[in-house]
Image 1 (cartoon, helix red, strand yellow):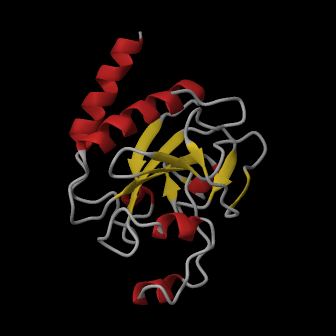
Image 2: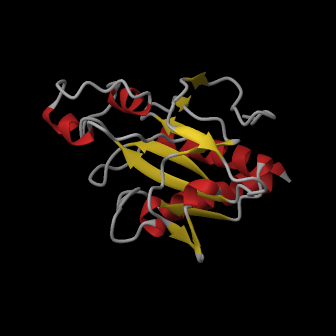
Image 3: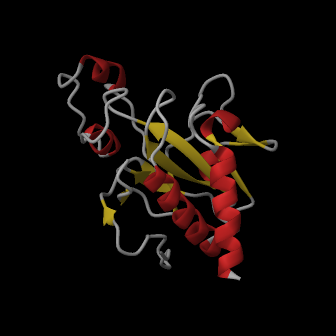
Length: 185
């Protein structure tokens, strides 16, 4: 996997989201934020997330969607439970994934972060394939950008967000990422 000069991941489906804009001039991309999402909640493999990020979600399609009626959000990447990666926003652009947030004294984390959504929830373990793909994607991002920290949405929006949730195995992910880094050297 490789990120090209435009901030796009080679070989993955790209569905452009209108929910993005330019990053501030001279702002280094140094934070990776991991999220979870499923639409409808706790349901996987539908197109709800794609429709949400593309502003095509039909509020009448599910009662929960009424709560999302005017929401304008996106992420750079979405990793489905089967490992498929969909990119919505080029890494060079600011995706709208973090909301009100701060990390190490800096607010507005969207300015300097890349958002990766895992198809999942706070109540369901993630798949082995998702961990494998997330590790490979993370390494590609680390090679393309000066990523200094990798955090959960809960870490930058404490009290407001809980994802990637208690079922995200940080130790497993960090060990795999460390091993992948050693193999790359």
